[in-house]
Image (tube, rainbow, N blue to C red; front, top):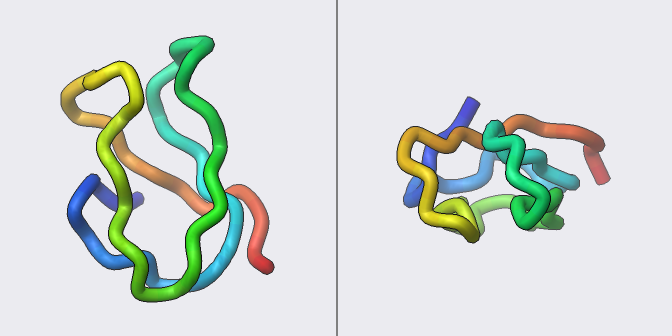
Length: 52
């Protein structure tokens, strides 16, 4: 799991840990920075949903 501000280790579709309707999966390329949760939930983490 990765936190906002950390670098993405591999390209893919990433899923946030928060369960809000507004928090969605995002596509990130390797070395991009993980963003904060769109709803500003603290403690959000990102997990790889699908590698690309």
